[in-house]
Length: 172
Ligand code: S3P
Image (cartoon, rainbow, N blue to C red):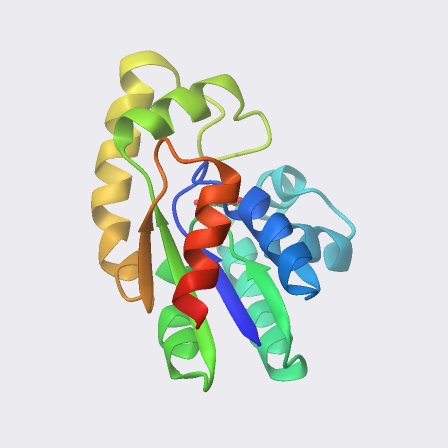
């Protein structure tokens, strides 16, 4: 079974992916971690030393390679992955692949992202009202890509278990 989780930064892709994979006895991969291992650098180091365009190229390359080389997995994407280099088309065209958009409100995202964004280069200089405005605009621009996932799950105040159960029901 091939499962991809996508959504904005802070939507819980990695946490949900990890728990979902355990329940389904599948391997779990977080694309950001995968890129970090392959490049031997943290995401922040890649952004700072090589720039975002380099990151997007590598993100595209490793995503394609991962999908082409594996046929059973839970894969959590980075928040921007579906929005660049035709990645969303590549995902939606893959046979027998279930994609889930973990949808979150701006309010929930602000709460989560104002606490911990030191590892997120796009947000690290933002806080307060500036952060809210950035999230609102960015989410608006990205939603058109996220909405192309096969399923959409509203995750705001739900527990990890509840979300995992919801996904498992949709897989049947
Ligand atoms: C990004 C999200 C990050 C990471 C990079 C860029 C984005 O992943 O890929 O910092 O463009 O939204 P998370 O969504 O796991 O934070």
